[in-house]
Image 1: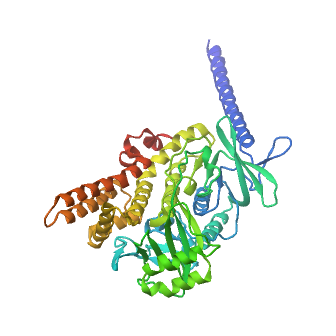
Image 2 (image 1 turned 120 degrees about the horizontal axis):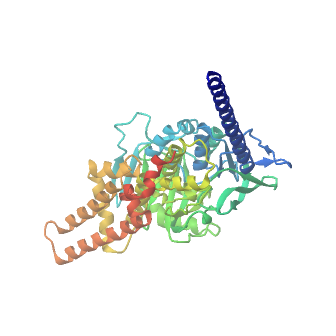
Image 3 (image 1 turned 180 degrees about the vertical axis):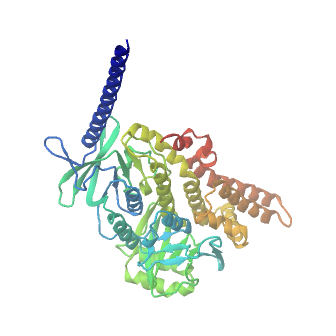
Length: 524
């Protein structure tokens, strides 16, 4: 009996070891099969026998289309987090643009958070401490509320191309970021999931690239976004850009905004010896550059409205002939959740560039996306990842919707109008900002990305309207003034509510009621 018990015990021990070994062997085989499947599914290049061959020595995690501000910053950020990134840019020469030259203090803080603050060094970038607003011979200075921040925190203005080249260099310096020049012609789709991209190299060779996540950052003229969002692009005006050389702004290190007729004119430094001038021209068409109509328009309509200190340099810039135009596009974010793909930057969301908030929104979006992707080791489950990343559209809203709404609303208020209620609103806005204290620091904090609170924006906007009504009714109200006050409130509502509706009331003011808001904490 004892011998039987001993034999039974030995048999049980042997059986236990056998089962444990079998279980471990199955797990290892399953892991190898998974790795093999991952290599087959997400391989940039493969040999004839199906083996994965990658130029960068590993499996690509993310493809990024476009190496502008958003694409380059995102590539560096994800690369720094250990992701293997394939960054594809149509043209790697230095861009020459007339927008994307002013980074608000809120954007500079995001740049610091991403470890990219050195990208504004050694490009002759200028520090910006606020704005000066001009209207009908009056002026008021609006300073950024920077008292609570480090002394180095301020706005920055620079040549857009120099900034982008620094960002590209920073991204390409990481060993796991592969930057190539090529034109992406289409997204590769399989059963409703984006698997990668088809692109042409500089030599005309057509290649395919695969990754579990493709992020499209190909700018305001994106040809890929139609399948990833519902684009409703509006072009309310054009910017006409000139560079004024060897002149001093009336207020150094400040942006200058002239509330001109028919629409605003902007001045800000882009180097130690150059000042950018942007003249807003409302409508879908601008005077012709070729036949001299543009130069005539600038000299006869615009020149008389700019500060006298800048007049000679302005005329000299027109005579030099280096005039550029750019459509001012506005497009609310309206993504179509697509497994395997995501939109970022101007391809995803645009606002009027009057307030210079585009780069601040893009960098803030990158911080949000980085924080969402950081806990995820693998990105292979496209369907689950797409469901999870729906939270991105809600988490980005506080800052993005504040800047977007303010840009659209301020542009409409700052434009001249023959309507008396619109005139009163414009006058009230200038005088409200001139009051100082919270009446100036509040709106400027919103504009600069330092206070991303949509409710605060709405309160200030209607405070301007109420201030305007109060001025109409004092000291003695009349029926005409009461009626004008009522119309002023109506105009205010007509300006801001459509913009808020386009941004999404629920996501903007009640994000906690959106189911996707909670996915960030549940998906690990």
